[in-house]
Length: 242
Ligand code: GTP
Image 1 (cartoon, helix red, strand yellow):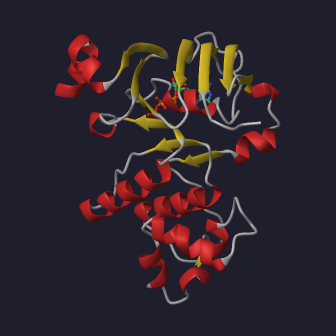
Image 2 (spheres, helix red, strand yellow):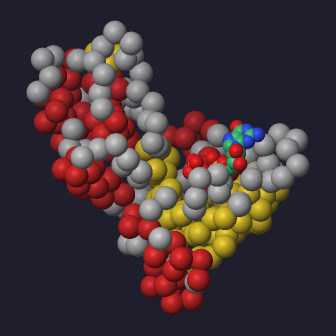
């Protein structure tokens, strides 16, 4: 069972089906419990593929992904996924009320718990301002939320589950500055105590990470803390300056 949330990638190679060129080549790193590992790389570098191996959306072709020393393939899939929070850019909301969307991973959650999670996710205010509040319908015949609002619903959902491991895509592309700082505050709250894999395209979002992997064409091109990479990595300094 997953307790601490130490994630280890041990010479992981991954290819889609019978594709010749692997998407990930010999990736090894460890994310220590409670720490944040940021994965920085341009589009197509393999960031999403890498994190998808943790909740087993895909399985490694070679090598091993371990959590707390156990190969993820030997962990009960429901248990594995119940301990991992996913806040991705296109967070999945379904047709149903806001309340149902927030309690998706914890159907037994009380209304108080749901509101508490929404407050911590900086979502309570916009929800309370809707005519039907938490009973507002989302989806096909319901209201349409903005990207930033959807993201905060996804954060509230993850907060309710209190996962051990968090997989986060922190791109906050289409939101105004006020919303962006609110989302950052919500993410900081969510990340407390979680082992976090943070997908990033911009250097400003990785500078505080405990460890940074620079991914290029499926390979780790550089790794270290921001200070270490600034000292030793030409690739990282180039990204920093651009
Ligand atoms: P962005 O999400 O654009 O920032 O890219 P990324 O760094 O997350 O890369 P990703 O892991 O999504 O993709 C890595 C490579 O795998 C790219 O060359 C993709 O074209 C390829 N790829 C992604 N999904 C699939 C898939 O479902 N099937 C196949 N065959 N290739 C895929």
